[in-house]
Length: 454
Image 1: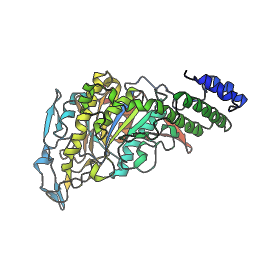
Image 2 (image 1 turned 60 degrees about the horizontal axis):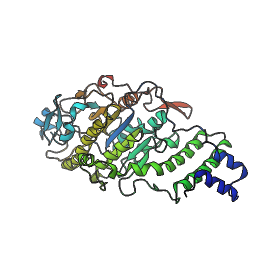
Image 3 (image 1 turned 180 degrees about the horizontal axis):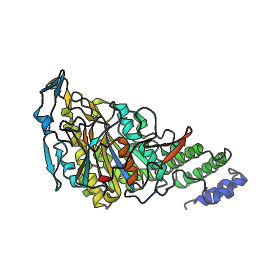
Image 4 (image 1 turned 90 degrees about the horizontal axis):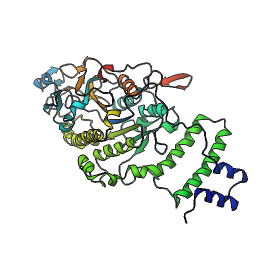
């Protein structure tokens, strides 16, 4: 006969393993202490319930992907000035969908979904090196540690699933800036992103050690009792409360997380859509499908990172643009499948997808025939799709060479303000008191890009 939790507690009490005053509290309901991850209402009615943030590490060339430049192509390998030559794209562009938006042949499957996508061709970043550009687009600061956008979303809205974090990151390797990309900095630690590493053990210690779930629950109840006593003895310190909650969430993940990664529960048609074998965790398609399973279970903000800080494994292309063919194949079909999957499940209209990178690549090179491009933060491309976004449109433009913004500049702060707005949060009201001042994700900057909203 199975032993119930109540029977287990009484057995421990009878054997003298529980102190007399502890029994009644363990038999009572769970602690009513403030939960820093409890679901909270937004400032106003949201269009999006959750976000999937697709980050391409290394600086994707806008000129070769989502921003065609025929004038630059016509001047390819001709001299602009001393030690500076024009470099056109090595890929052709095709028009897709009813909107007829041009997309590079690197992304034919994403191109096939273009009527659901808004392409921003006028993005700028605040720093042109990998570290500064990466934390700039994630935190709004290129020089100081600040909380990641996912941490701000966790802080502002909490989680819809008590057994899973509000913010999760699937990253095979460490991107430029490492864990700062998903760090919570001065926000309580519970809002830091939980990193998942594709492979047989995506989250360390994911399986429980106790022989039964009932015994583990009893042990956790006892631990919770002592934690709450410790917390009350220290004035309900918010940082300590967040630390305790992070361990409670980790314990809850042992119940919920294994199901998230069990792709054998997906239908054959879904696996075929992504081109996945359920045991293959090596590609971006696995990240996309697991990301969908995360948001399906209440995770608010999921970041999927392609590439790491090794130039051989990311979109950094100082000397080898030809590697884009392989890199694009890894993500193109997977992202298109994710969009189709969300639409089939009725989740596309309340899920925001953001495809971005830290900066673009330069239209100029030092020598003719160079097979690469330098960093270029002055202008690059990003796209959004899903909840509250007008699909089948281009917003903003770069000049005829792809060198500078020509119209409707969108800063990283504008992008962040727009994402928060779609989640029902006013970026100027989402603040946290630290070091004597109120901080926010967008600092003193940022405007919602209202023209791209449906």
